[in-house]
Length: 273
Ligand SMILES: Nc1ncnc2c1ncn2[C@@H]1O[C@H](COP(=O)(O)OP(=O)(O)OP(=O)(O)O)[C@@H](O)[C@H]1O
Image (cartoon, rainbow, N blue to C red; front, side):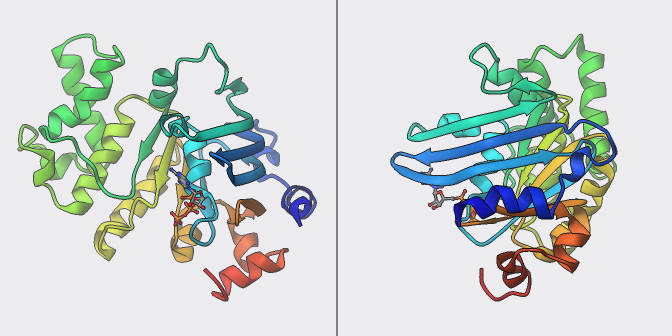
């Protein structure tokens, strides 16, 4: 059983990240994660192609969020959590002892399930990251960063007259786009999204999905989603997890039209999860 996860993946679904000759943005090799004595992920191997959207799908508790958190070392913040294996970002080992984790999290930004703006103004929500990472030359530069980030997140027009009002005063969908703008402000290469639309209504969801579509021109995006429709709409590559194993990975169309593994078939047919 355990071998299916890695060998079947390699045989049945070649890694699309290297298919066009371009090196993957992120590579995960033999990644295992433990919470205390309990193992949550088993030998996960995945290539994340650059400037594209990779969706992580699978039933509740299969390890999607755990894997996502490995990619910017957010699991470091959970004391009982231990990660083994190797993860590289642009061929650099992100678990290297000498690596600056704060800098890593600026390069690999994260957007969470529930919009979580700081209890500060819209402006300060965006300005916070660039300030602490020393990316700001002067006041004009900071204003530029705030405007550009809000523009890229499709929010500038809606908030330009009230950037000094609290971020928490925005609608849920706007707050989530503010959080995306906040992630963009530190000029990341990769944006991780953990069910970014699960707290949003269909209209706000559509806007965020549209935004994801635009962002992928310039960013590598990895998104956890419970919605198979969303995975189909927004991603080019899909990885299916099941009880801690990466069962199958491939081009999104192939995973949904022609899944190779019975567990993937059952999941996308709605037979479990
Ligand atoms: N902080 C933690 N401490 C202990 N166990 C945890 C922790 N976080 C996750 N786990 C366990 O690890 C396993 C994988 O959980 P994870 O949240 O990664 O799955 P998921 O696929 O993202 O689930 P969901 O879709 O419900 O969010 C589960 O058995 C979960 O109980």
